Length: 431
Image (tube, rainbow, N blue to C red; front, side, top):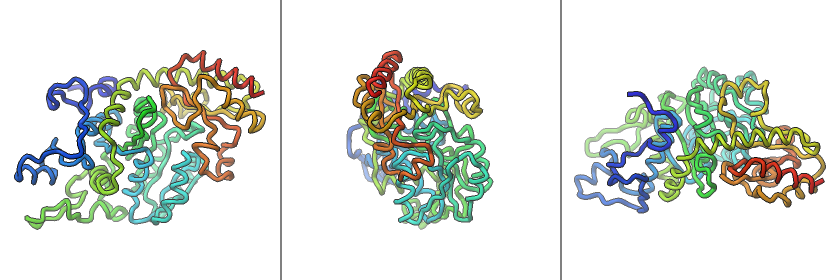
């Protein structure tokens, strides 16, 4: 049987109506717990021996499960775990890889909260980060790999510069060192880029953004390719025996590797981090994201087209010093290689003048909304150094070309001429 393509999977993957009283839309299982029926059945359910049955919504919920399976299918992964936010997805992934301590290589030009967590928070848990200014400086990346390096972490499209990571080259370096490549693929979503096709091992998402597309839910995802070998002394947490995986009555013991094989990583995310740390995604939220996901192709096609036109307009405006949007870099081979459908609906630009000009522009937009989110159906504008990247020290921001004059746009579904007109009049007022 031929595997269904993306636009079929986004509607149908992970859901069989006959398992849900033939409801055409995924039902919302708004319940904290599920009946265990009888003691014999309970033993099978709580030990995970009965597929498709649930006991407690922190461990699993049918509505959320459809969302997880659908995303795994769209991303080309073996499985996925949905969590309460994109930061929870990143945190659980880093902890799952390096909870015994170690080092992770990452670029500096990433989302502000991610960089803040990597710089100031994870080191308190014995997980340290080695940063590079350019993740595509492969010699620099290679030189940072030590015995205790546990992973390479990148954003497929950087926030807010839209620089593109060369995933295939980075995957080669990671796998030669027998470590995984972790990719935050929030900006492109699986519609514009499937990192597993280019060697990535784990993807993380803030599904608050383009996957949902309507700015009404906070959520995150961890997706496992299922190809990395976790049975390694570098990652002992996957091979050590776990009491909850064995059978006390039969005196047997299991590890995540011995019990789940290729699914060791994602099963450990679910059973250790989601179950015990508890950043659970609510079923109503999963339902809303599933609704948004059904239109992801049409939304992103429209947003890419509009973002491209707006970026071109900004390059010609006399009050704009620089535009950051790799989608219009015709000589960039990574655009052609990784993004034949476009790099997404997010772009940035550096305004001439001073902070007063920036503030006046923001205060005078009429169609754009001034709020810190991306991937919404509404077009958004922020000044990153004062909002999304405020945690990043000035010297790091400036080394990446992110100064107080930079504005980030997330392009929505409004008429592109209205959006250009809004920017044009606000820039005029600003100057």
